[in-house]
Image 1 (tube, rainbow, N blue to C red):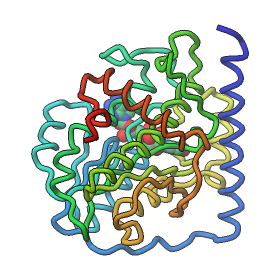
Image 2 (cartoon, protein in one colour):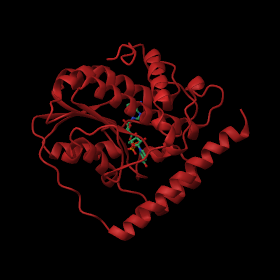
Image 3 (cartoon, rainbow, N blue to C red):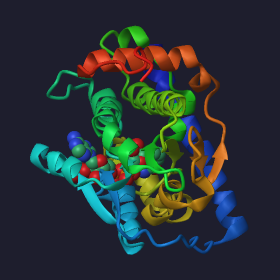
Image 4 (cartoon, helix red, strand yellow):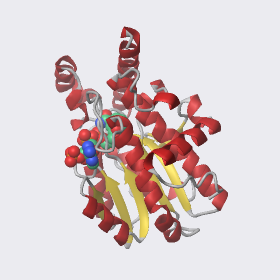
Length: 300
Ligand SMILES: NC(=O)c1ccc[n+]([C@@H]2O[C@H](COP(=O)([O-])OP(=O)(O)OC[C@H]3O[C@@H](n4cnc5c(N)ncnc54)[C@H](OP(=O)(O)O)[C@@H]3O)[C@@H](O)[C@H]2O)c1
């Protein structure tokens, strides 16, 4: 593995992280602590939140529950996951579980951990729940899928021939790739849902740089800087959850899918994420990896 293939992703990830932090600081100075938006109550609705036990996910769960939703926290436990599928009625699916910058290692199914957990796990979960989501969405109240990406996708590269980074592993590159894959997946999913005329929407959220446990694998020097500056330049987990909550329940987004959302606004993702051929190829490859039929091939 070349020195460059390890160092370049690291530099790019830190570059994009610093850029976001600077924007957050300017925004905080400009707006102060803005009041949280108020959303309509969501009684009788069901939300599934992966990674809902901590960080951004926890604050998403808390807010959705306050709005009256029945919230299911999806975790590692298989029985719990099956129970989630069984209980689903009108639904919002929030996909937040993730790891960042872990050393090279594999999931129990042999996938590189960032790609397997952050991306493929959510790809599979969405596909398993899709029929239920389609049945629960109606014209005036679409079922919603909310995927959590990150600004690191802007410096991500999708290596279709080496999605598990076995030729050359960089934790920064692998994390960024998993987050780019989530953007490509969400857009492709929306194309398929639109083609079918289903009442399900899929959007992807960038929460900003948020003070959570996600940074547990950064080096000690970065941990130290984070410890000293997070109060000023990082979002709190509650602030970090706000765009996810917006994507899950805001009336502004009724029937609207295929958007990249940041600070509760639609914004542009990386140019290559709009490449429909790449979206299709990743989808097909992902179906093969998780062993499900490719609905894109049979036109849904
Ligand atoms: N924090 C940021 O600055 C930031 C920036 C951009 C994007 N994001 C994205 O936002 C999402 C939430 O991150 P966060 O900041 O809230 O991080 P976090 O506090 O570390 O939360 C991550 C969640 O993922 C769960 N998780 C980890 N490994 C898992 C596994 N093997 N199976 C099931 N669940 C697992 C964790 O559960 P356990 O604690 O039980 O392991 C935890 O609830 C992630 O997708 C992350 O990539 C975060």
